[in-house]
Length: 235
Image 1 (tube, rainbow, N blue to C red):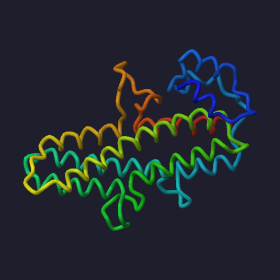
Image 2 (tube, one colour):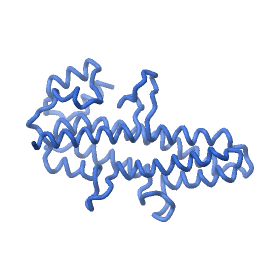
Image 3 (cartoon, rainbow, N blue to C red):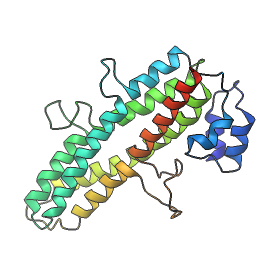
């Protein structure tokens, strides 16, 4: 994974040695204070790269950005999953909430019940696309390259679980009426929680930004680190 991350960084731009050593040592921390020494203090991002980050952080009207939109949809999904769990023996009840979950993941129209007209999957895909575009720009900073990699890996993790949840919701929706769905309802809750908060797959007590562990909470944390670093560049 470390080799893949380094290969994805733009050819021709030398990373600070401190950051390279931290990554190779497996010590690339989520804590911005611990990676502070690895960045070029004079290397803030330019306007082109930041325009893509701004799409993720806030929209052109100064309202919710794509990542916040995705998290709002994820919270709605979690609410419906929790409600389904409360009456897991009632198949009609579980099916109703599975329909809401499916619509919030991938709405067929703006009126389908999602918090946004995007739906979670589309919003997260747009987050990934925008951040990757920012990383490809000539005026991208080390902060965008490093934290951008964290955000895109988080997006991949969320998208994988989102597709699993979509398949589960479809399975519930298309199950014959009066089917026993009591075993499926807890799975809705588990996937909804993992989309929000990630999953400690290796059991080390932490949610890493690698290895398909992070969720939207981690992605938002990495975005905050990126914005904090860019503000520091401008001081």
